[in-house]
Amino acid sequence: MKNPIWFLLWLLILIFISFIVAFIGAFFYIYLYMLEACCDCWNGINNFLLKCVQFPHYCAEAMLECRSPF
Image (tube, rainbow, N blue to C red; front, side, top):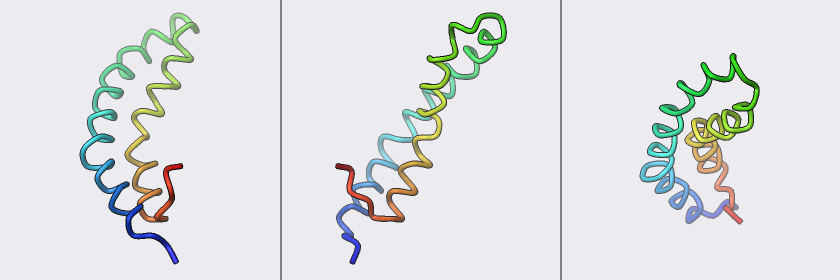
């Protein structure tokens, strides 16, 4: 049986943290993605920012699966 406490934890993370992380990450990702066409040195930073943008999706999947964060 899945633990509903993890559902609530992921819901709180989704609402209060992940959207803020995604908005900030998207802002920088858009501008640095243009610079990546000129220089490949931005590739690592853009990969990290893309994961920040996808963080709400990760939280929603974990919430639906009642996955433990540990």
